[in-house]
Image 1: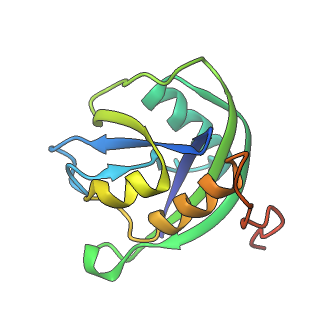
Image 2: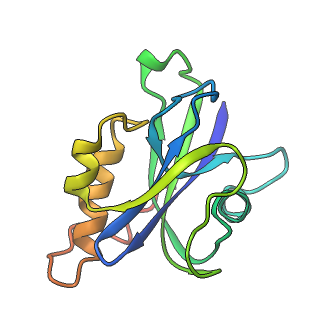
Length: 150
C-alpha cells in the first residue's frame, strides 16, 4: 500500500488547489491538493507537515483528519491510500510555488473547483463542498469533526 498525506488548506470558504506539472506520472496537469508520499518510518501527520513545507512553504499548526480515500480503479494504481486533512491554521504567511511539482496554485470555492475540470481525485469535490460550507462563517457546517477513523 502507498500512503499519501494530503492537506486541504481552508481559508474564508476557499480551498487551496495546486496544478500538477505536465511531467508528473500520476495526474499530470490536474488540480490537486498539497501533499505526497509518506516516507518509510514517517507518520502521516509528519509527512503532511513536511510536504506542505516543501511544496508551498507553509507549516500546518492546526489540522484534523477528515477522510481516507482509495485510489479510483480507473487510475491504474489501486494500491494508493489518501489520508486527507483539513488545515485551518499555518505558519509561513501566503503559500508559494516551490519546486517543480506544480505549475500553478489557486484559492477556490467549492463551486469554482467543480468547474475547473481536471480534479485529480473524484471524491475531492465532495470534500471541498463540505469544508467550504463548514468554514464559511455564513454557512451551516455539515462536517462532523469527530468523524475520525479508527
